[in-house]
Length: 143
Image (cartoon, rainbow, N blue to C red; front, top):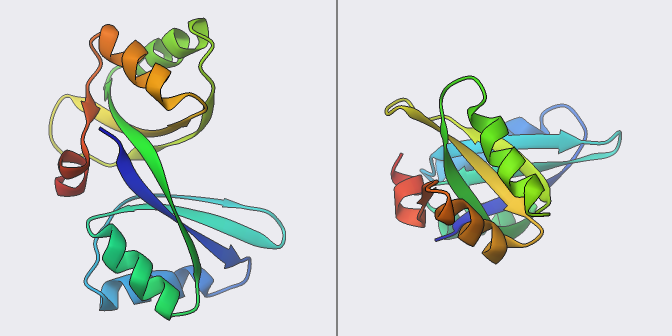
């Protein structure tokens, strides 16, 4: 039910992001979604890729610190208020969104959002009970 995300810890200096994308390009790994958060000294690059283990191995061999986290890919109605509907539901159930970012999907009527929750199992049950679609790993990696 969950998708795998890799997190790459980067020094906040020019060229580091380019190095990551170069390593992934060389390894023939396709980036499906990404988010970058930074402070003055370092950044965390979160990635959904089509070959998680291949990406982790290549990045570690290139000297990057890499972690793996399970996240949820949720279809969100692609209309005004679509995201609010999901966030309002989660808030009413007391489920905290630790972070989220968009997934580019060029087909279909829904957008896809990547979520990390404090209570993933409760989030899954809550979303499914209200009819929201959670994509499995294979669906996410093939988009």
